[in-house]
Image 1 (cartoon, one colour):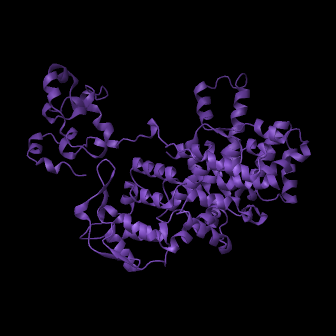
Image 2: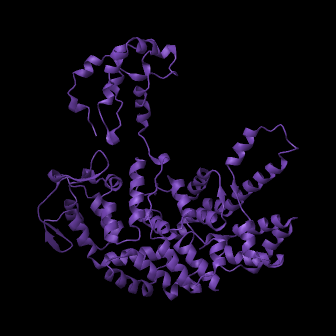
Length: 143
Length: 387
């Protein structure tokens, strides 16, 4: 019955006994002290895989790179340079005017959300950036 | 995130911490749309799970996930939102019937201004705080949120409520007042030390009485984590296990409502029962399949591409038999079912089930297969659902 009691403790104070726990054959008092002792250490659950990004963060990661090669000619050609929208920039134009393009930071990069991620807003996607500039900057921070 | 925690439960030496954290995870039920906030809440719970309850309560109450979930960011001086204050008293500390509607209103005023900033850090917004005098549970003063929690924890009902809930989780679904009363007194005396309370619970004589054993229905998380731990199961794709957990009715970080998961008999219903009983065979049939695949690799289906094989292998579990064989030692085969039953089941094995298990074992041709069949039929017994 003693083994059964030991297993009882391991099920209730944890997630069940392992074969080696039963084989060790501790008394319940000793096993409890060991459980309490081993539970003293705390380490947070964290890893690179668990640092989540805002789904929009993936979109906004584009400005750092020159341009996505995945954007085909159909997507690249009609975009006006003034739109300052990263994914649609023509790679050829970027090469021709490196300084001008570098100066054009996407407006969306200016509006920081929680975690400091730039937010992609509808206004940034519309070609006429002139109307966007008229907005008071206070409107951009929503959070 | 769920798999990371499930791994901890199955393998961490800090078993007690993870188990208590699982309890608090249901006690402080919370679901958010921001995984980083949920993870922060979980780590806060895990860190303080065995400390003093008031510390845990304060830390949890100030987590952005909880403030967001219980709408305290809408709780402002001009328009108090009572949700947070109500849940703190009803679900976290006192339980229904131990406070009045007026207490909820007054506590809500005390919690005004508790909020969080853009970096998910707790902030106190003084301009939204109602600094006027409040009367909460018989005490009057210009209370803030911390004061409100302190006053709530001075109520005798708080210790009774928390101890009863812990008892139902760790000892028996049917609370026994004769066991709970002394625990409550000690809990108050220790200034709500959770680790101390659990030590008392697990060293009490009544905890080891035969009547106390096999009285709890395993929650899906405990069932899956327990299978993995007791059998040293190696899982290639642990996301698949989350699917089973979901089908059984418990997804971590997604409690059904503010009250958390209902425990005990609520776990078993007509749809989950079948899957519960079949889960071991589903997992181990996969394992067998993987083994056979390796045997056949050389000759029978040489045209199978390596890729196909790997895809199949990623969705399997590996059941190492060595630790079990070691446990059995050199026991003769006819005794093995009984010995394994003692290890796997907390309830005694009935003779008719023993016959059933022996029948399954007799079908095997090799000792390994025999052992596997025995294990499988034992794990599929209804008794395995109890702990």
